[in-house]
Image (tube, rainbow, N blue to C red):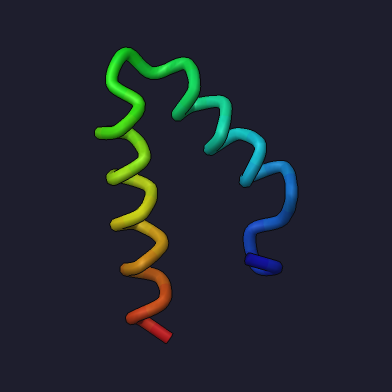
Length: 40
């Protein structure tokens, strides 16, 4: 996570908490982060 930094993690958390469907938003970010891991 050092690539992204603390500000990005806070923004992701805020986006998830404020979303109408938090589970769907969390899955979107999970998939995005897993995609970054696979590309390395």
